[in-house]
Length: 361
Image 1 (cartoon, rainbow, N blue to C red):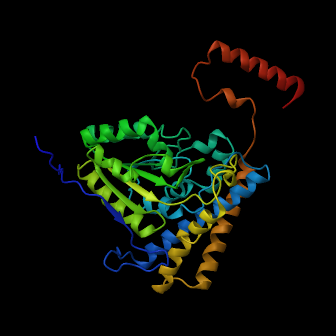
Image 2 (cartoon, rainbow, N blue to C red; image 1 turned 180 degrees about the horizontal axis):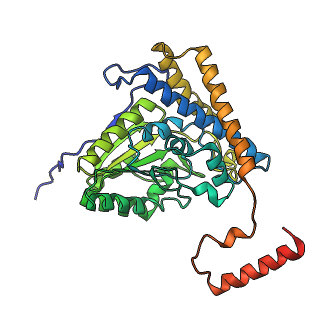
Image 3 (cartoon, rainbow, N blue to C red; image 1 turned 135 degrees about the horizontal axis):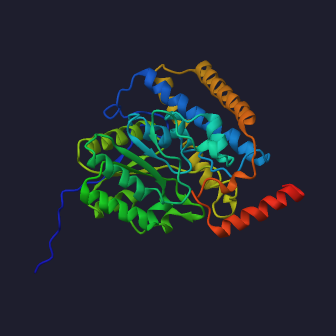
């Protein structure tokens, strides 16, 4: 038989609305009102202010291991805007900006990152789960939630996000394949920040992009400029609408960059060069958005200074509440895993408590 070109009618797009200089493609501008744009901008600024504060706290020994997200604010905030409160969100561990949009408090996230069980309390009135620390481990269960929504006949949609490293886990392939077959109402958002700890993206997959992998599963795929909050917002809004209409899942690849360490236990100078970081810092999503808002007359120097001051004060207030709320109880570490503690852990608990009574921490 002759070789012929197969055409399954699938296409792949790359979406960019704001370029690196903040200039907008007028034909693609979604036309958000200034109030909405400023809400997005304020959320991005809050995200960065919390990032800066928690990184300092960790370096001062006042916070546990922390995963900074500087440079990924547009992806975080743009991705969450289209969800209703009744929709489900299952974040990865670098998503605190999106979590705050959904109702998580500054002090709650600080408690969470410092290891307090109280920090995992879900905000009232939202369908949400605490972030997943296991790389890619939440992708398949999130797909299960989407199928439950379908079986129950609701129009709820699930959004889950993860890094490029998670796409090499079997969970990703199994989940997307299943969701494609059964038209699960879910949006898979890959925040491709170019590094999975020390593994560069070019060693993550032989595919041209993560979005290309969607084609192999027969589902919709799109790549967006992840430092362009308008592009991320539009792509997710379209994907959510498709899922809500029963048209199945979408894989969105948001191209962005992790400007800081993978976690505070990491030293990125070992595996990446300063000039690479500098190139991406020139693409800073907040600075880009500021230029766009200035051109619209929605923002000026005074407004920028005021917003930064207000969001920094919000983080400061959260920090004070965190200091008041945290009360270490070193005996509770055995309390929240098993309903009935296995015998070997009962022995470990007894030994641990005896040591605390005898010698302290």
